[in-house]
Image (cartoon, rainbow, N blue to C red; front, side, top):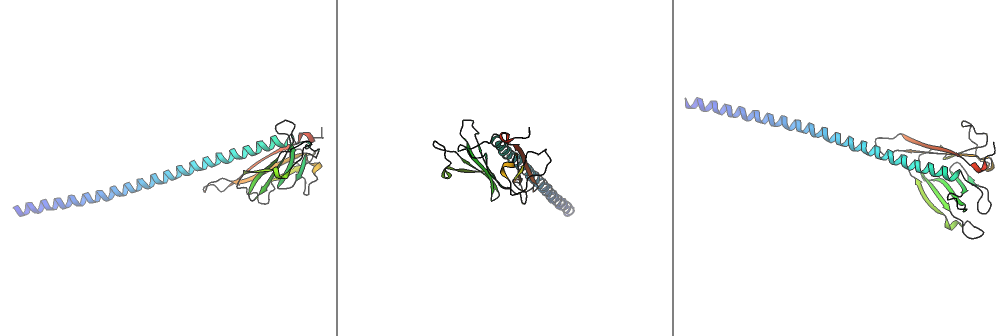
Length: 212
């Protein structure tokens, strides 16, 4: 009859409407899961990219510091006024005279640790005879974020140093110093890496060598 046919049609319509709603819910759920996956993946990619970038930046900065330190300390010699090549030597500061441009002008260079940063002061003498005017000293920061804790920035060794000898003890007798070791400890600039990295090198003051 017309009533029975109408009822079957209505049931089919209701059934198909219900199925379509279920499909919609499932589709939305799958889409949400895929979105979460891609957002997480994207976040991990950005974090990895940041970690790689910061690692490279940190290594590049530390390499520049260590190379400059070696090139400046190795040729250290008497100042323009005849003062001893080493002017200061403590656990966290080292001052010396050097002609880094090889032009006969002995600059006074000081590396020191201050407020978690390694800083470098350069003083070029003026006049004849040359004088070192403190007002002309220029200071720059060469490395931030240092976390040395109880570890000294500098260690010093005498002419008996063989690569494994213990460092000299503070207070240091400056004329005994023949080798200088610098060590900087700093974490990477990333929330996913809290392990500190250690950057270190050592250099012999070639104008002071006396063991051969």
